[in-house]
Amino acid sequence: MLELVGLDHIVLRTARLAPMLDFYCGVLGCVIERETSLDLGLTQLRAGAALIDLVAVDSKLGRVGGEPPTASGNNLDHFCLQLKPLSEKAILGHLNEHGIKFGEFASRYGAQGQGNSIYIQDPDGNTVELRVAL
Image (cartoon, rainbow, N blue to C red; front, side, top):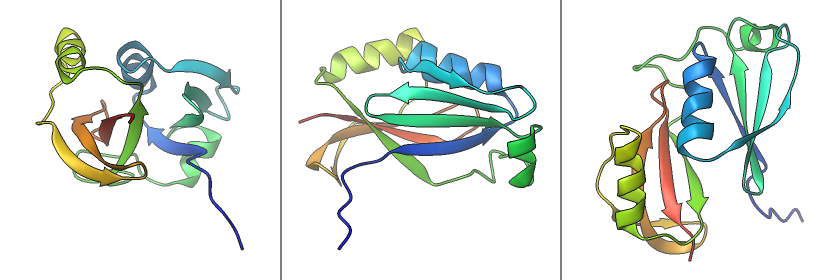
């Protein structure tokens, strides 16, 4: 029997690589771990124990996926990033500093059980749930 231990990576296709890098690195604190040639079009960001792969839609890899994501046609519903313990006030202050719009904190069920989380959107309109680790 297979036993899953966590999220390895997620791949997001984008037509706006620079704003996506600003968001994931500048706002959320990811770091670029690996970049391929511009022709291949893959930038891998370290997000804790997982990776967020950004693929330029006009690259060799990106063209395989078809049209770029839009506000009405995203790549996915949402994904959740687990944060190290931090107060809700500190999280909201950080998001405000970066001009990121956000919803309300709410108790939601996830891989670590019930916990508070908040939804934000990246520059391509993908919904990102931020969840504080237990």
